[in-house]
Structures are given as structure tokens and as C-alpha cells.
Image 1 (tube, protein in one colour):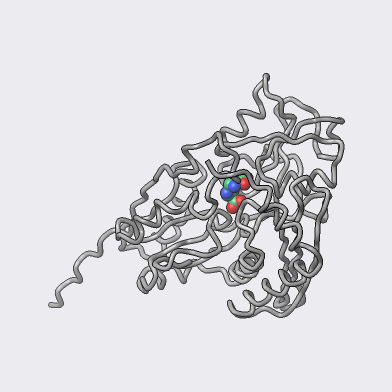
Image 2 (cartoon, helix red, strand yellow; image 1 turned 120 degrees about the horizontal axis):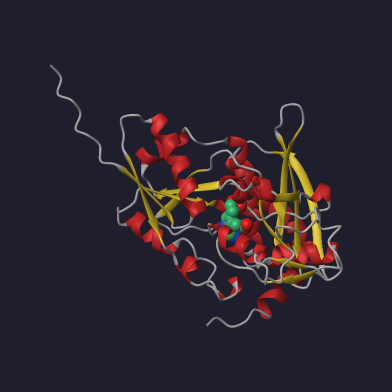
Length: 332
Ligand SMILES: NCc1[nH]cc(CCC(=O)O)c1CC(=O)O
């Protein structure tokens, strides 16, 4: 009689300690459990630096490690085997000892408008003169300032539930807020979305990687990578790799207003179109361009992103980015 294989240790999944992060980690755990029914999985939720400090504006943090550094330390030391991130919170360059193990099927990448409970407005266009839009994202406020000069903008930080409570509060100054559609949908708040803000509908270009999850593993952890391979969605992966390559080439980081939109074209959906914008902080200057090409491999996706970045730089994104970096407040 063959001796049974020794039981495998549980696969340990790390994530941030927010409702959204937990929902995302549980979704990945459930998918992995179907793929590997005999394996056990554990979720470890960690409070990260970015969750603890809700007062500083986002650009005052060292953007590279805000959400990810502590979890990555645990990954490298073997306390975790996998980190479930929002891809858009992952720096475009990962630590040497970590790698992007998979990008699963992306959810709705668009931004969405949520109006204060009880107010009758259903779109940015119909908000009254001077109405305050809550967002701490310069990408969102800068693009929206250009399109809707009648609106005002104010910082709004915190996790999804906190932001929503601040907007709905009777004493609050906000008439509405802008958040990612995917984030709202994942925690059951789709009914609060008044308007989807894709660029074809009077909206804006979304963040690089928005709506997608990034599954991070230890570099060279072949077993976990093989398991995750079954969660990979190739069209989402190629589009997100192209977006991340654009951002890496522009050296944007999450604090610079870079917006993108990607779309698969043609009967066989093998041509990628990517539109991107770089905006000055006040929205007064911007550079926007679009390219399309056949994209089938990770390398082609990276080159595609670089090509669009080069076009933007040539058209003046360089000067805008320099200005933003020069005017950045000192870290404290
Ligand atoms: N910047 C924080 C953040 N990171 C990921 C999401 C939502 C999930 C996603 O868009 O992938 C959010 C909230 C938001 O920006 O509205």
C-alpha cells in the first residue's frame, strides 16, 4: 500500500485589514480552494502604514511602500505565501525578492460617481455651481476640473465605508465623491453608483491597474506560481502590464495624475488600444494620446506601454511631470 503524501502546510494569504481587502482575499481563497480542494488556506489581515495615517495627503507618503512593504517583508520571511493587492496600489517595480504571480480577470476599471444620500443629482453635469466633489486623487480632481469648471474639489480620505459616511453625513461639505466602480461593487455598494465615469460618457481616464487584483508571491516560488496560473486572465494581464509599463516609463507612481483606458479591438480581440493622459495638478495643462497595436506577449505589452509613454513625453508630458515633482511638498 502506498504511503499517503504528507499533508501540505496551509497556504497563507496576506492582505490589508479593510473590508474591501478582506472581500478580495476571500474571493481569491475561494477560487484557489476550488482548484486545490485538498489544500487548506489561511488569511492574515494586516494593518499597513497607509491604513493607519488618514490625515496626511497621499502625496506626502513615500508612494513606493505605502501599502505593500510590511506584507512583503512577511512574504519574503515565509510567514505568508501570497499577498492579494489591488493592482493599482502595487508599485510598478517590486522588491527583488518578490514577483507578480498572477493578474486574474479584471473587474470594471472605471471611476464612478456617488452622490450624497438624499440629494437629487444623478451626474456631474447636473450638479449645481460650486458643489463639492470629494476625492484625494489628483488624477481624478485634475481631470474633472478641466471638464467641469463649475465644481469644487476637497480632500476625502479613508477606506470606502469611511468616505461614504463622510459624504452622507448631514454636516459634511461634500455633495458627492468619486471612487472606483470595482471597489464599490465588491463590497455590495453598486446601488450607490449614480454615474460611470468612462471617458466616452463625459468621464475621465482611470488609474493604472484599477479594477484588477495583483497576486504577489516570493520570487522563484514555482509551486505557488503554478497554482496561481489557473487564475490568470490573459487579456486583463496584457492590458494591465501595458498600463504599468506606461507608468514605469513616465516614473509616475500613484501620486502623479496619469489616467489610462485600455480596450481590445478587432474580431479576434488581439489588438490593444490604450489611451493615456498626464495632467498638471490644477488641471490647466494636459497631454493626451492613444495608440493601438497587436499585443500577444508580456514583452509586447511592456513595449506597447513604453511606446505610448514616449509619445506623451514628446508631446510635453515631460514638462508637466517635472513641475509636479518640483512642487511636491517635502516629506514629513
Ligand atoms: N486608492 C485606493 C484604492 N485602491 C484600490 C481601490 C479600489 C479597487 C480598485 O480600483 O482596484 C481603491 C479605492 C478607490 O480608489 O476608489
